[in-house]
Image 1 (cartoon, rainbow, N blue to C red):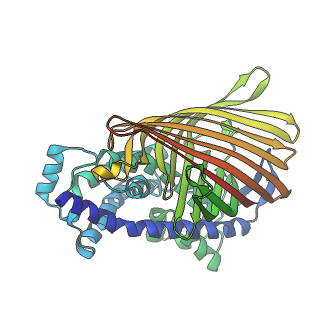
Image 2: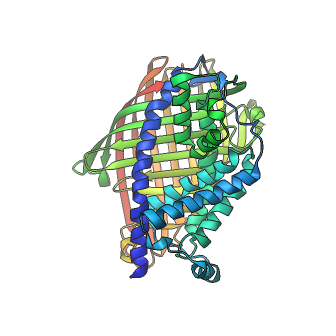
Image 3: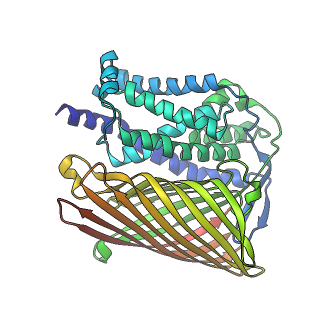
Length: 480
């Protein structure tokens, strides 16, 4: 009884954070394009997309003075702040820690916890990104910052809750937190412009701090928010904003449909095929965020992938081939379908040119999933709303570009999760997308997508499950 009450308090204490994050994502997706348009940008056409070249107005944090002690202090301070709020302001039972609870946690060690899907699969990675950027915004490199995430998570698991340490919390906070942390570190760098002033400067610092709160804190306490200097760094990004309607058909039935309005943000940082320029992890990454809303449901979709290593190779007469290793994170959640995975993937990609302005880009990949989760009909019988475990994934995609006007894309992903926490068995999740879009202007296109989601659950003590849902959507896309 006590454990169930504690779990209930944990969920209630942080579910409001989810609502805040939803609003934050929506604000960022609306306001971020303002800063793109306000740049003195050079716009050129790459092979497939519009490239925004932040050649003069992009801030660089590479020259930040390294301060590992301040980074460690901020990680500890963050944990104490979150705990103190729960202990003294919201009066949560799980925050009643003492020396004896710490000793108990050390003695009995790790287990799997039963927190909600959004709590474990999104809020913990978000917390991990704050640890990571405490180090990153104090001048530490990607690899130097990673241990701070692990250390911060271990401190929280052992010392800041009366519950036993959790395997899934540690994995989600550390692995996914590093991915989100590095992406938000670089995106906030793009927004900051130390040559701007007045309302524009305030707005840039404000939005950058929303995306990366720990960087905002460090810029504030170091007085850098009002520094004035040029920005020598040069970055290339591709940004696309989509608006449209999305129809979701449960179990492929026309009678079980829900209609959503959606906004989607896609960003590609760097040039995928310019591997010679990729000197550090995440010098190339992609990130997508999607918010959909109907009268009785919301869809949240977030995915990110950052290259850790890549290299070109020749294949027959084609020189546009490369192999890469990347860290990836995906989260998708609505009322009938939930899935998340944090993984390390290997990928082979190639680009074939049909003509000077037509080509096809193909990729195949395999991934090892550190921790993944999907919703389950039966998990509620043991007090959970999802199954959790490690696994494997495969993917294949193809993007065809015809004369820089007509675009056809195909994506297939298959995931297998072996359930370690939940209903004993295995989960198989697949996603297939076929999309078509046409550029009516250089910076505007119309498109439509067909998306199929399938989940097969094979269980040792329950009836197997096969669920299939279809999504159809139409949209307008802006290339910024």
